[in-house]
Each structure stands twice: as structure tokens, then as C-alpha cells.
Length: 410
Image 1 (cartoon, rainbow, N blue to C red):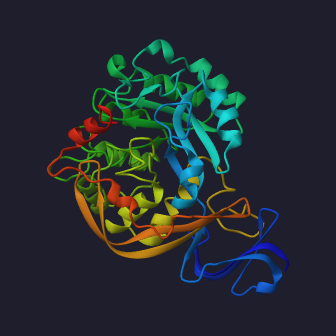
Image 2 (image 1 turned 45 degrees about the vertical axis):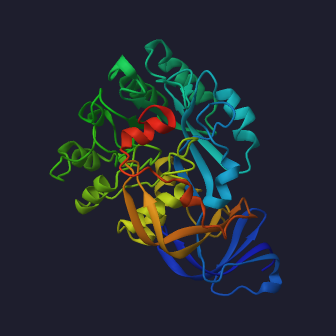
């Protein structure tokens, strides 16, 4: 078969189909046209040698902030796509109805990487997030106008995947549970899922969780105390079990202050693995401790989550969460979005949002991605210096680390 691009000799892992085997992948006009044990090299105009590498669906980062240039906290998706194996970034509410058109025109439509988005229940989006400014976008309920949110989602149906609300002492200040109720109503009216962020109380986790419906996303599911999902004893709180049984999606959303190794270990021990692994990459987590989705996946592997499950939580699972069956899988006729990854031996030190260290024996590294059928190499694939940039001070607490970076625990 003739093709534009041939990915040859890699170990193809496609969690959706259950395939884990050596396969060549032929691509033509942005689509996969062949998946075979051996496709002759003469058939291809361009060949990527994937020998010794993992070939997976392009990674989908369900929680990121990529309204670069439009919001103070966002990073540029195209600058981290190839290094992180990410072909699809889901922006988690950086923009609200008041500035979503700018996000669409100036970033989403111009990005080489695919960008989809949750629209924030706050009309202004996340507008006050920097080294020196921390203003919760839901602190003023005049900004939480569900009719505007619905109108924005309807206008931008091609890229809007849900509604986002950030609740907590930092994100919603004295508004309590009201922003969550307004966001749930807007999401219900438009027929889309909700992603809920919880930081420090109020409101408490026990107020937010019962409001979440099947298919809604609880991000920061492994967050530290306070509002942690586990008791001090290590037992998982009953409302987390009830939410899982109800079909609420648990998403890591690592970020700067929302991932705790000790909480993750307790949740995993109770059989509550995350449904989705995401980075919550933004200006204050891109240089550590989150870095990107690939580092977050490596951390979950170090905590004992199997490789295939980790890949599924960054491909098929987020694709299901946003109702995009055309993404997160490798199939003949499907979109040619792929990641070429390698398991690089350690030891390597990882840090959580509390400053706790975890020494891992391996990590995942991206050699590049196939985006819409085009090869996009990671020019920095040989570098191992990235994780060294984040070095917490000895004994520094989560609150101190967060304050050092941006004055709050978000």
C-alpha cells in the first residue's frame, strides 16, 4: 500500500482495542490506512523508525491551560506538544463566555496541536492568576451567568466539550456552593458534562461531590489536605466511593498544588485508580512539579499503575469523557494522531505538590508525535534536564511551595 508516512517497528499499545503487539502503521492524507506486522518501506514517502519504542494514540490532556497570551496563567500548547506526546489539549476553563471568541480566533484556530475547551461558568474566565495577583473568578457571583455560558457553548459547539467551575476558598472566595449549582444547571441545559475543581474549603468536598452527575469530572481527585479524599487513617471517604459508583470521572489534574503522593497511594490501595491522568499544566506548573502529562503518567507508573492502564487513562478515557470517539484510539480509517514514546531507565526523582520525593526506576519520554498525519519530532528528546528544574527547598510545605510561586494553593 502506498502511504505518506510509515511508522515502522514499534510496539503498538491501543488500550481501546486491547492491541499490544509489534505493528507498522501506514498513514495517507491524515488517516491511518494500514496496521500490519510488516509493511514494506518502499511503500512510504517518509519513514519514522519506532524500533524499541511504544506507539500509542496521541495523548489527550484533559486538564490544561493553553489560552496563551489571553490569560496570565496559560502556556503555549505548540511549545509542549511534541515533548509531551500530546496531540489534543483540553483547556479547563481559562476562558469564559466574555473572552471565548478571542481564545477561538487567536489560539485554537491557529494552533498546530488540537485544542478543545471547557467554558468557564465565570464570564471572565480565569483572569486574576499570576505571581502577584490571585483573584478567584467565581468570587463575584455577578460574573457567574449561566445564560451567557450556554450561549457561548452553543456558538462554539465544534470546540466546547463542557462547562468548568472552580470552587473553593481561592477560586470562589465567599460565594460558597453557588457557582457549582449555576455551572451544573448550565451544563445540564446545554447537555454537556461539568468539570469541577475543588481547592481549599469552603465549599467542602462533601458539598460538591453529591452535585456531580454521571460523566461529570472531579479534577484534582488526589489533592492534599484540606479537602483531601481520604481520612488521616488512610481510609477513603465514603462520598468518593459513592461518586465512583455514580459514574463521576476521577481526574488527576496535577497542577502546582493538587497532587499528593500519599493520597494517591491510599486511593490506589483502595482500588480507586484515576479514570483520567491529566497535567493541569499552566505557567506555574510547567516547570514543575507537573511539567506535562507524560511526567504525570510516569509518576503514576512509579506508584504502581500498570503501563497499559496509564496509557489508557491518557488516551481512550479522556476521549470518552469528552464524547470524541474519533480520538484516543488507533484504527484503520481513523485520524492519524500518534505518540512515539520510550521507557527511559532511571533512577529519576519526581516531586508532588507537597514537595515529597518519589524515586522511580523509569520514565516515559516522547520522541515525537504524529499530528493529523504529519510527523512532529521532539527536538529535545535526548535531554534529561527538565525534571531537575523543579527543586523544592528542604522541608518546604505545600503551602510554602505554592506561595513561593503564586501566592495561593491552586
